[in-house]
Image 1 (cartoon, rainbow, N blue to C red):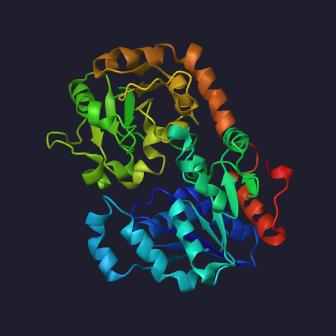
Image 2: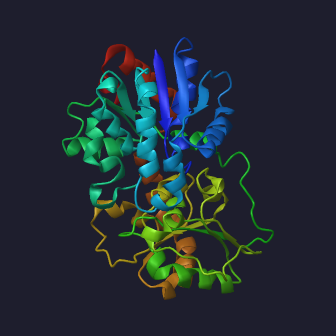
Image 3: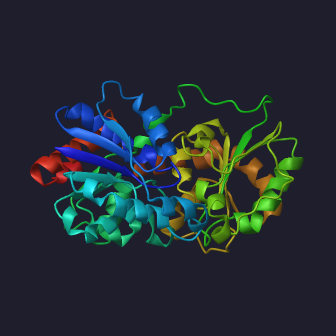
Length: 388
């Protein structure tokens, strides 16, 4: 059996959501060929680092290329279109056709359906996050997911919501868990990024224009922490917010630089490998799916309602029950204090319940369970109710 994992982005943030399945599958089925196909060096390097956590795996990490013209225009084109991603797809379709299945973390790969050479190749979707789904029509809620041959889900909550919407009637799916958690553990060594003992706040605005707090509150928030004698700040937005600055309206004034109590990071590896999520004592954000990664180890949170959302009864804002919600940057200081004071009595139980509902938690690692599901599907063409 020939299995490929396709990583095709200009940022490596999707890597930890999919490559653990490949490493685990190669251990489960040593006679199968598992190849991790990376369109960038950053993806390949990140995949190799994660692979070190899976001793005995036999997956091969390989680079696949894009045409020179696509590489040349990508620094500008990426702000508004996935030109390079589509070029990678087109240039490598003959290679993709040699696989029995391609495992992918994003929806652009559905474009491969248009090529008759790939008609026998199974497309398996993993997603790359576990948020509530803004407007219930992006990420795991996108109806195009039903076009995949098989889907891996993070937990029972999202499975119940999607099947309740009539989804997956003809699409085999398995609840596997969240393999990204396998690349970092709070019990290992919690990153220490500052030399003082102030509480560390992580400000993590999403890149989605209709949901981000950056445009309305970003500068005020950075000013608040720049002057603060009470907190350290990690400013680590979604890696695409500033990488797509032209279309996202994101600009960082030159006066903001990392210093003794502020770390400014617009998209390094630490933004996507759990380092900042584990280093922080308090989460500050809007509608990023990283909030669910943060509450895997429950801690205080504050949320910014920058668009006057009527959110209280809206399931797309379920995460806003994890801490105080404010609609003015002026209230930030009081909200941070309140989040800490009210955490154990009010917010910890809510976070723990949401975490256990969002992620399948058990003795078997997500990567291993997902690998077993993939193997079962590839060998039988089915996934029974035991996977739900």
